[in-house]
Length: 342
Image 1 (spheres, helix red, strand yellow):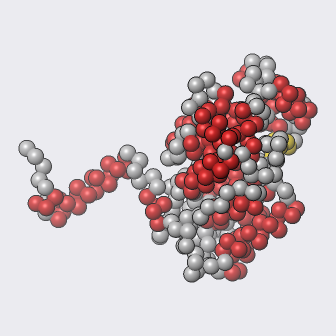
Image 2 (cartoon, helix red, strand yellow):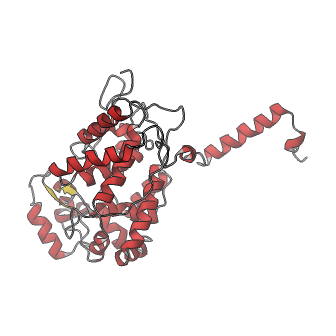
Image 3 (tube, one colour):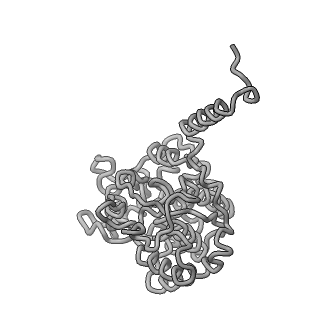
């Protein structure tokens, strides 16, 4: 027998059907970015109209003493969004109720820029108290950092609220410099991002910043446990990396991610991959993995910085929409390191 039409149902029956449909949609993952619809670039136009100006001023001041801070702040936004969404959880310190994501393996002694975020928050609290969330600060800081490094501009949807929990288990499963292409695609797909274009575009953030030798050395001396170098790595570049990261050397020593233009946001990252000079295994995988569906996109971005910039901006917006809290969800922290009332 055919089910009754919605018009013929009693109000309680219609409500039940609506609940069931919403539950089915959630089970299929349709609700992953439901909150993103409430974000808008003009969110602070009336409540904190100078927000971008304040963030830019603090970042430029920080950059005077730290040339890599722009790349570090961009990375913080990545690491925040990939763990229970863009909710500022990476900024929370340890407490009686919080196990901080800062001490997850991918972040510990690696993720940085927290004092600069604190400085931005303090400046915004002075200008417009209790208005701008820490999650939005990370999104704005990443955008301005890319712009100030010569990269693309885009309008950042705003209105995120801050979470009140952290998830160190999820933080320990962030995309890794040792991941192969299959693992990278799985991790990007798991948070609702496209496993080809978003993956290749967002990986392009490795066009600026530094990397510790501990993340490079396995490619040089013991790739995949073989006791030999990664065969996908150019011999000349391997020799250069070996000088910077000698066998048994200091794992925390720093080298450039992009040997061509280490502090500029440009498309040379993709040209490096074409020359087999990707610094991290996860970078080179985008081109050199057998049958890589990402290879054509790498080639397109290597040939057109405009295409890369356009895709990067779109992908940053998509990433910034992951599982956001909006409306009455979460809170606007007064201090990015602790939940309110702690």
